[in-house]
Image (tube, rainbow, N blue to C red; front, side, top):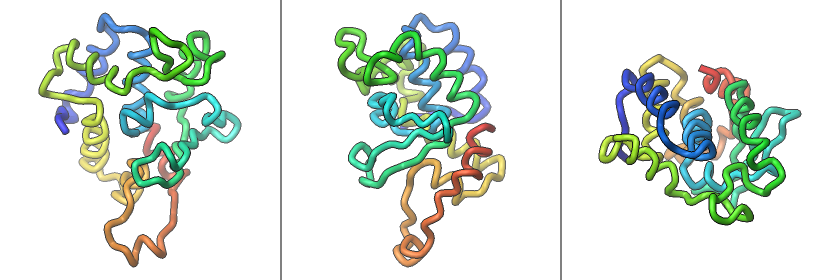
Length: 178
């Protein structure tokens, strides 16, 4: 997936903040970057999946690529995004409601279209935000197992996968705050 280099992240964040896009779309892109989730997982996020008391977003198995429930630690940054969204969608089912039909989620291509309009066409797609996060965190020397858990990847080694069921939630919380 098309992505940018870690040294371009600052410019991306600046471009997002100044872009002529809807606030819900801006929040969607930031949410996806902070949570390291796939575009469809973010776009279809529901308020009922958010556990503020335990600072977790629990994505049900049926919405995950590998059909396994995925817990995403909520950081101060993601909680701030939720606070920005609350007046816009807090009384609706989805965090990121459709502009034309508030009873459903936004289009799963919304982030891609916005990035393209912001000048990132053929340079960065929404799914590429995951590669950007992984590359950045790996280059900084973070634990690869923790990064892979944050990305909801399953271990290719069947024996290791059978025995290692660690979620690394607290270590992921620290990683994701970075």
